[in-house]
Length: 267
View: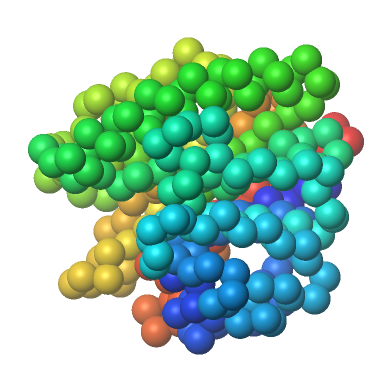
């Protein structure tokens, strides 16, 4: 079994004060992928930076207090790579991958964008470069007899079932036609699989992010933007996928919830 969890922590130092450490201590995951860490290693409390039983790797952003991704693994990685060969984005704390036996696991924090602004242009540039890399990664892994799973905050909903209020968000970043088409290219063109959707094909959601504004969490008015995107061989071994949604609003330690997939590698 390989259990992989992905969660945007919305600032690891803040999450640590709200319950991240007890959650991690109670997790059965073999790998935990974090996004939006928003801290350099030296700023992170030791019990969070080097928790017992875990090997940790951090890729902070050059811009202080921004982005940042991390990987927590039970086994020591065979290889670690920060970035995906992009002159513009490799220092932005948005991509980190590690090789474990037979599987490459990556943590991704794709830019959120903002329709009609430079932020959206930046998002499109990232998407263009990253799709090319995903194709190369899949080909390289296949040649090495490996599988791949890219976990993280993809900041795009692919289908109407992926967000509660899709009708009012058709012109907003995260559900723009160009973004949805690009995610389709990741699946149909590059040949990856949206693992959670493959296990829950008829489900509304399951959502993984709820705004802190209003009563979005209480009303389950969420977005499914935290994904595990895998090569077909690994996706076929997924036996369970679930979102660890907090019971109540005060129990949340991030505006995102952890997304976990269990892969039965012996299948």
